[in-house]
Image 1: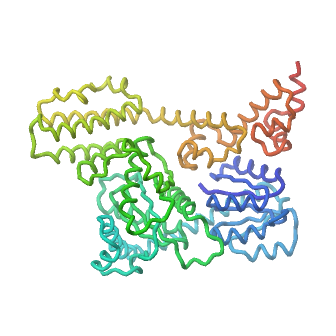
Image 2: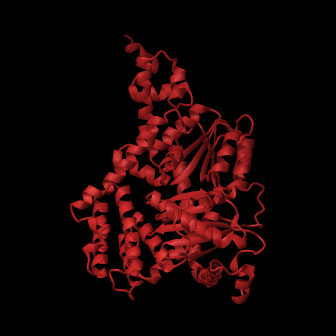
Length: 548
């Protein structure tokens, strides 16, 4: 999904174009601004792909905003939309990169065709960039493996200088300078491909993710990365001193939007935890461990099945209560328990079975049912199961297939093999229930969205607002809502607003402009247009018809 910003001082023009785009189903997230300064504020808070920009506006005019856009988001496309066939303005606009020009008098289909063409150009450029990256895969891998060993040694507690010296690496080959701090991002990717397809697939995943991130961050950052496992990655970003643009995006915002853009491009679920402040090299290990623990805690509290990027401050990482995170012991047992819990909440049941058997093998030297370490391990695993079952209210559903008392009554088994076989059977039951409950989960999401809309009708209710409210990727949210309800989010919001307006017109004496404001319309004029289009008569006529 791409993000488009409409900028015009005429409210009805902005609302007309917004409505047009929603109905055209171009899979766009639409943002609106009614003056140049508002547009700049949005541009500093969001990554924008396309801007529909009025040229003649009070205050900052369109050309001034365009200059800022080219500095801030150089790959952003601009379509100048104006009511004036002014040669001087057109001449200046056409000299700018990634720009087009349309008169407001053009037919709707002309505007939509220009936007569709612009989307096609963006996608074509992305494909070309990716093809270029693919053509240089060998060069990437030659650089990636030394970087991986470098980061691996750093995470083991070694200093930058010691690692670089032992591996005979230079800052240039590492991509990161020892004199400057870095931003850390812990990234979990839920690949759609089967894990059984081997190392070649994993290598392709590494290439895909890194190449897509590299395209997304443009020239603003240099970076290095490491694959911690098949699904988990750590990225180290450093601001590029070579960037000479006068306006620079907020680094955290830019990185957050870059991961969101990468998720949309790859079409795999990417959940990312981004530290909002730069980290010094000596602090790297502690912040990395905190990010890991925080991410595990986040997974345990929320079933992250869709792409989302979480920005956390060092204070948030350091203030976690002991009950929120697991121990920071680096033993294999505790890491395997972390992985097991993570995979359980992610619905990766095949990985759960692998983790379970790895945990069982870790105590092969002990067969006694009275072994305290094994008893402790079993009940640790049982605790994860019971928490999951309680969180998702599965007690009654599970009891139809398998008893739960062996989770807390270990005397049911005479060997550990039987005990772990029971846990594997429980995983199979949970997997079966998970598949059958996907529809229920989706319906709960739809109900949550509808409730949020009902409670916030007086707000603008952008797709970004809704996605942040329910922690889902905007593109997925838009698609799943329309698929489940048969109506777009935009149309549903307008329908709810009109329904509320009818009630207020019948039951109150509030002025029409106040009603329009209360239900989230920018102007009473636009409210009247939408109301008449939906109901068939104006708000005033509707009120008169329902006078008692």
